[in-house]
Image (cartoon, rainbow, N blue to C red; front, side):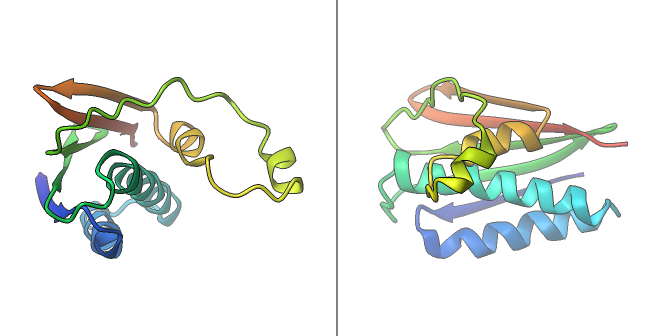
Length: 137
């Protein structure tokens, strides 16, 4: 089963993305914890694409595809802008220290890496693509 969504690059569409992912995953009767983990990971990557890669330019759009392959969930997020967005390696931060310091922002991709089994950024033509996967039993 495969499902796809296209949105304009605006934060206003983040709730639509979360609802789309949640509905898709709930149709597979997954645990609430797993659903919330994937929704959070996808939301973070989509927000990064919207804000950092496309500057919230609503003339640009993102394509989101969700698919199951036996026991693996595969998520692909692709932009259609002209800017290549390939985040560098994400350090493994000390979340406890980060919270104690009262810092905000900048931890999203570290969290995505913890929630998903595989996180890959690459280019397809002049577009950026992020592939996320999670093994589900």
